[in-house]
Image (tube, rainbow over all chains, first blue to last red):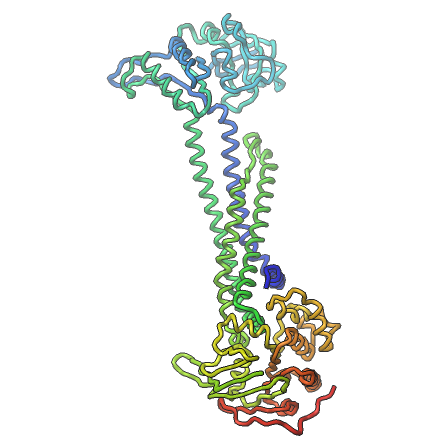
Length: 408
Length: 230
């Protein structure tokens, strides 16, 4: 007997009990689609977070330590000379930019409104290093940076609060920050809070008019060539600063080095575990589905004992019977798996379509169905068919024809 | 030709041994029409199972068309059934939810024959059911079902047609039709063995083998055989 014939007989068997077959398949469908959907959601979260963070993953931020180290020397501030020393390091292959920043809260006012913004004083490379874009106008250039120009670039929250939602409306107006007047030359594109509540100006402008003089900076941002270069770049930064601050013991360090990359790695790791965990929970329903297949196949074999006897009497071999029932359960589980995959993909696409309705946080969120999750869950469905069908099919194949024929 | 030599069959039910056949010798030539008769418990069903290669004897030899089939494996027996034996059962035993023509085709499927549809149609026409090909078993009367079963039994051109109480579930009219059909097949040269406990059925046979308690007690050729005519 060839396979096509076996398949036809098996399909006829399944069609004979259509409702039962569909219900049994439903168990597999639910299991497979939930595995695919949950893995897709996990991947979606990961990729949408990574998409936002990845461009910043090559940044290293250095801030002064808070408080004294007991018994140690008085902590030194981060100063322009530190920045210059690190900029010299920029000759190394791992660092593309080093920019200083001073930050602080300050009242930003027009005649009509006031807003407490975070004032940032930095260089003209701030925009590029932070991977931000302009919504209107332009960022201050090197000449403005050097000339301590009284210009400011507003974050979108500040601009819309003070000048209305159209970013262009803010351009060429003046704002008062710390009772000093600055000309608005640009508005940043939104990156989400708290980044949207900033007012960025040249470093020395900020020092002269807002924070007071001195050569202190309270943040140095180092941009590594790529995320993979971050650990090496970090080592170089630590070595240079430790040397300059005469620190021999790492416990006495008066600065802290933070990078998004290591946090991103941790985040991804946690997310992977969570995804696996939810997939495992979904797999439980797949397991229940498998038991459903086993159960129905056992019922089917018992119910059709007489039919098996007839088939054997007219010449069916053990193998023919085994094939018939095995193919039945393979079709049951395989078809269930296939439909489950389609449902899972469908729900993922639907999820991507409706996600933006849940607010801007979800705007870029889309479940990502991966090929391995599809291939593996289809493989598992077939394995279920084979395993859950194998025992009943074997039982059917071993039935003795005279006893099977006597079965009522 | 069918030849049983000193065939015994012992069933083991737990610790108890049940002896169903005590040394049966039986030879059936090609083209014979034999009725095997006996009350229940006489061993006629066991004999039929062995003749039909559904079971193997505990001891003794069974030569079917010259092949000793008494020591064959399950698989080989299935192949013998597929090629050499056609069954007609008391309860018709058609595969449910499967059309008449597909039921008739089934032995060819298991024998691995590819071109079957026409053979199956032809076989159904031969038993007078050319117009019932697509009908499901539950859409057919008992007599019609039995005729489908006969068509199915014949499709492989078996050496032996075995009918186990073929009229047991049928009314008188249908019984007559079926017996006529079986008689006609024998007239055409087919070897037919009918197992029955009905004397009327036995009247049709050219030879009647009577069994009791696992032994053949008489084996007679009937001279005044009832003529079966259509």
